[in-house]
Image (cartoon, rainbow, N blue to C red; front, side, top):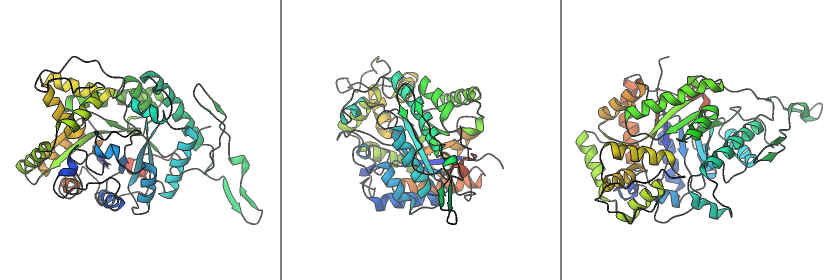
Length: 431
């Protein structure tokens, strides 16, 4: 078959735009499960590969409302598994503030509950404020990635402790589990000591899909070694091509092929039936931004309090933070390349938290996505609607059919698991 796009839905209940919840008719809560279930069913109707839910481990009332007020991701996805049947279900869990045994167990459970649709977004947690909720000190960037590498190895090892045929359930002999087919892990490393095995049988996918989004050098190395899907932060096609090529070039060193890793840049599409209508919608959204929510996001992304700077002045010379490396690098690079003022960067961050904003008619948006997809910038896209439901249903009802007409996107699911959707084989246990 010809190569086709993969589409993920980044779900924030109040929309990816910081003020999306204020758009007329928008969903205003990320705690309303009926609304979340409708979003999930819409994504499945649109034949998306997966729904992805990020997470935040601290609450800041000035931040994006869906980061501060939300359902716990794994609980929510387990519930969504009962109201969907094909779409993948991915969630963030931190390698800095969780433990490998619990993570292996919960994602294997989700994979069983969903019949093979679970995905784990392994993040190191950039925001240092999270540490206060766990009674500890936030590790620096390098240490977080050292921990993450070992954490991923332990989780993968725990998933592989069970052979596929370990559960015998032979009523005649009375043997339920064959002990010869269940193996201890006996891991003892620099950060973790885990005996294993985990107390749940091998997952339907063998190993649930692993997602990652690290844009720094350690993050890219870890992704090349362990990730099945990589979310990237980019603002223009040349930069996206360079990042895409660099990541794919790293794979051979780990014995992997380019087809084994799917790269999905984040994009916030503002869809209208015409370009003019789309830009009018974006103008409405931007009109809702105020100094408190915009500056809070900008300060968070750049790792420094920006409230003391003149919004109509130049962008100050600030170092890359120890927190959101890729966001800060991409945004500051774009700002300097385009000679932006601080207010321009503020508006860009508020619109999509530093992600790429694509505004236009279905044809305009499909043209742009097609160019990125066919010229080595992406394997698909992580779609971040500015608000729900209309801001997403317009993409599903107007853009997806245009991509299908061009032969760029599936017209039906051809498998039942997330690995099927991504074209990934089911791995055998590693010993």
